[in-house]
Image (tube, rainbow, N blue to C red; front, side):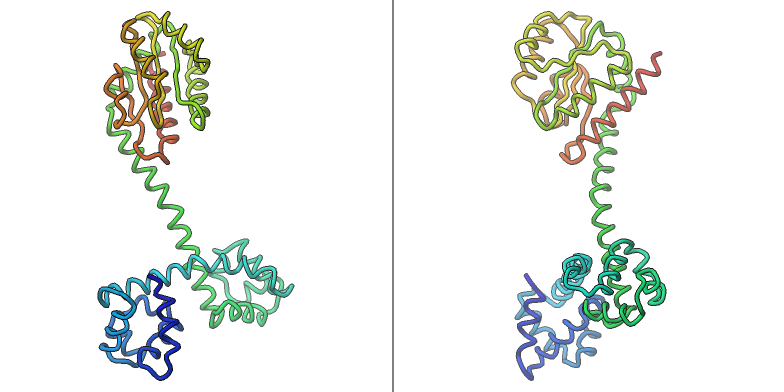
Length: 316
């Protein structure tokens, strides 16, 4: 539902109460998103019945849904404000370009600066700041500051959300295996005569390389074999005092399943780093969890490495 389009359509209906309401909301989109239904009707100079009719004609379930749609439109307007400044840069005068570049270079400063401070930073006159604000649809410098602050806050919130999701995924990973399991894995790695590392290829290759390098630096006799023929030959020579380490960030391929089969025949211990959803988790002798969320797996592997390295250091 595009509530702004609905408002613009209604605003063209001359002399209709709905048109009056639409024009008021379009002119005060931010303020309209944060008032009660009674206040909105009173401020727009229409009855609540007109407000209800308009909400129904716009396809909203009720008045609460209507105000929610207005709020979403207001937030969308905020998120696009910085983009609008960038898009208009080429068509601005030389003086106004300085203002735009100053704002884009330090939005936090521009959102709190006085007109004099912003003019000084941009090396323009206060009148240029006013013209620039009005060219963006702002009433004055205060309105410009408010729009910049809201856009900056929204962008920060959008940036934080993925980080919070990753943090939550890592906390869940931490809870899936206790300290004893991680220490057991480290003890088994340290006691092994040699460690054979198998990992996913393609986009996951750098992750496997990171595991190989850091465990090698920790003093393990670890080999990472990527050639299928050499891998088959190496698997056939596994001994009970060797160890098979499998890294499966996303899925288990046929080579991994074959490796587990050979290891079980040779009575070689298998440690698997994978999500709980993979069958490999139950087939391994020691399962070390990775986050289920795809965007958190790289961080989960680094987290697992940190825990293993700490366990290996404790053994020394």
